[in-house]
Image: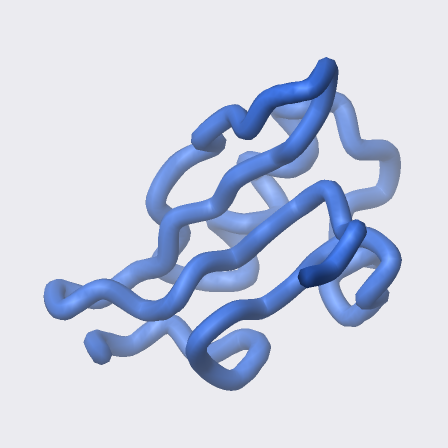
Amino acid sequence: MSSAPIVVHPPSAGGGRRVTLHRHGRDEILGLAHSDHDLVVFLEAAGILDPAQVLDDPRWIEWRGGRAHHWGAA
């Protein structure tokens, strides 16, 4: 189990990956991302400063059930 506050979940059957943020003791769903751009937009809206810089930082993001930056259907 990672301590990263952001989790990019496994690709869904229809494409895209759910993104959650753990803060204030709970998980908050940020949305269903279909690209790195979507992920950056979600993180920016959640108040993450310079979100493009954290995409490959395991201290910030845990990519589950698939390769990082892979957005296609499962």
